[in-house]
Length: 273
Length: 249
Image (cartoon, rainbow over all chains, first blue to last red; front, side, top):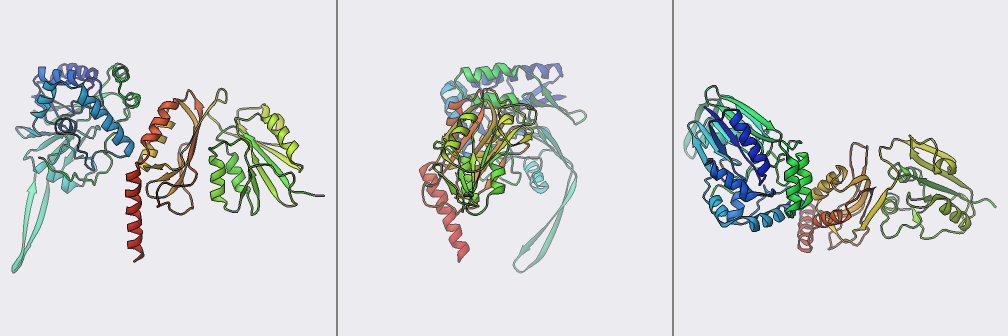
């Protein structure tokens, strides 16, 4: 079975309809979405309507959560004061734009989804705000996958797609208790994988193209798809709808920067609610 | 009676006028840059790097023997008129230096200068706008400044050929930042002055941008978004002061 997995659409309707068409062309039989349906882009309601109309299983992204619960930035959120001010502006704009039923839908989204040996989260199983960067320390990366009980963990949030294979390895732990001899335990784990599906509507890989992933359950093959779409339409709508022009400029260049996705050692201090 | 010497340094923006002057300054030298207005980045940079330099607000009528006066003539000034004015104000031997794009074989600078330095220059000289802003008292978030300079150099606010400025940042340090189109790197230079940790800084800060089609309003708004609030300034300053006092123990 071919599964298409996408994330981080960010109100970019033009990109969404293009990749949905591409998924069909690729023969995807099931689609999963890893959240961040809204924020920065000009068509948050349209995007949510489309996801709902296709009945696509979706987890909550950090933006979806913030829209429902109110903006509650943690240290993961912004790399600079400028980014924070722009993020808040986008949040306020999106909040005003959203229909009540859109917010209700976002409020119902789960943090994690599972299918067979696959798990789907936005940022990490720990928090939708936490980044699983490709350079994340191997032990922590493995811990995050093991926490889901899955073999393949699909995530987004960094806006740059990657596939990371965590080779089967041995973990040895030592337990020391008062008056008890040190106890040593060993575990062996089979191969695990982290698949970051990139971003549909707000890429940061240096090009405006949308990315998503096709996963073939039959042969365990992952294909990262990069799809061109008419990003100029989205850029024009950003300006037309009163969002800051700089959002359009950054989208044109695939330079999404508004959130902190550079420090691989940073772990989110707030857990999953 | 013999006297000191006047160096007149002119040319296109970003080609090395101030740098050339800085390399030659000696104890007791004088510097003047006509019509600076309120934003005089080069002047303040030279003063910080050469504390013994005397920055003149007006031309002296004469120069004592052995003293050198460096006059930097901005790109936005009429060269012939400025030269004539300077000659009428001071009586001393003069040498004229020009920094011009190496692609130019003939220009107003070629006809004027005693020495012409051809420098690689990837931007046009026609229709250059100058946008500048005094930023004294503002304290900047360094990560935001980096973002802003990235956006300026990548064309988010029009065609920026040169952008330079001096900024106070949140940890009390004082930075000179310099971008020239065609140069690979943006220069971030920490200036050798003491940390400012007592409220809004009372020392020069400002930015100058040369380019075309500049989106002045957007530049101003983004600059404002890079500035710390009053509360944040005091918060960071107190943190730094605490860290410094702990280190001192």
